[in-house]
Image (cartoon, rainbow, N blue to C red; front, side, top):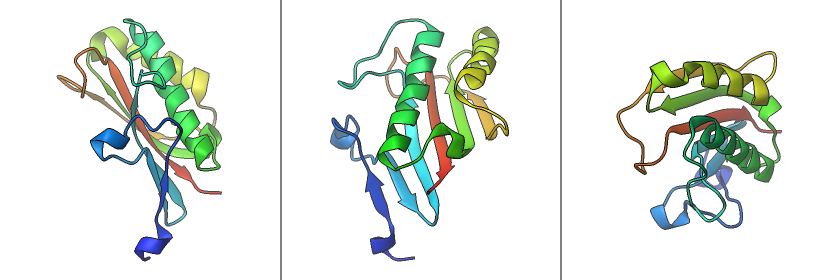
Length: 131
């Protein structure tokens, strides 16, 4: 694989551009989606509750995948970072059911002390098959 085999995926607006982060990279038959938080198209955090931010984070993953020609059905692996596992594990399971379907992708769920912005409660990255 060469640099010409690597495609940068971006949406408009690309809220990650100022941070020198690709929203996703398509390479080697896969789409690697960068961590998506509960932010709107202008980069502002939506809501102050976990489920609202979680739904937006999944919607952002979906939006980036669409820009790469894929859907959530193509996802084979997700990583979900949460700030409070004890309080939010039931909501994570509910969100997985809302946005993902059988066969459910492989998943890593981690509790972290902080995310890139202090008001973020969840961040999700994904790996999907490129079609």
